[in-house]
Length: 276
Image (tube, rainbow, N blue to C red):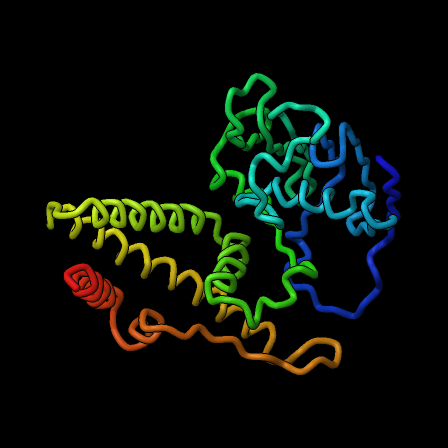
């Protein structure tokens, strides 16, 4: 594996009350083909905790990125599609496949670009069938906090929202669809506004979709924050407890009024901004 060595270690014996132990997932096999610095790699895993060791440039982070691409989203590096294939191959093709173990048995999951693909469009595979990212999200979720993200708490709000949304997807796979619907409606509205005078009724319908979806997205985020606060308020292993909160107009409105009224306020705000 290009100089990469792997140490397979048993889980550390920490006194942690893991309420979700029965839901734990782990990989028993990882196959990488034409990805980053790997032409081919086949990793057989027989432990639920794995530590990768090796010199700089061996490909440790590439393995982690490959795993992150098994889940919905653009992966831990948010890389462009042309950066994923092995540079020496001159091919668009690349793939990552894994056997995922859970309490319900094993499942085969894959991601990549087909050998005969004319474009570098990434597909997701479940038990040999092409599926949506939302469907994959029902089987596997991946969360990460890497060194290059050390500024997340002082970075832009959008960076923190992306991090939070990825955590939401881990517990609510349908959140992927909400985010995609919101971003699509936002793009369509921006295009119409850029083109000049347009049908106000069409813009209002898009703004209704944006308002409805924004409320659903915010509610899902708030649900995760509430659950995190329940877990984190007392701290762990001597670390102090923390309390998280979401700050924004939509968040405050949802605390003060029914969701339907919040949608109305968001539509009024969108119309005001459009007319301005």
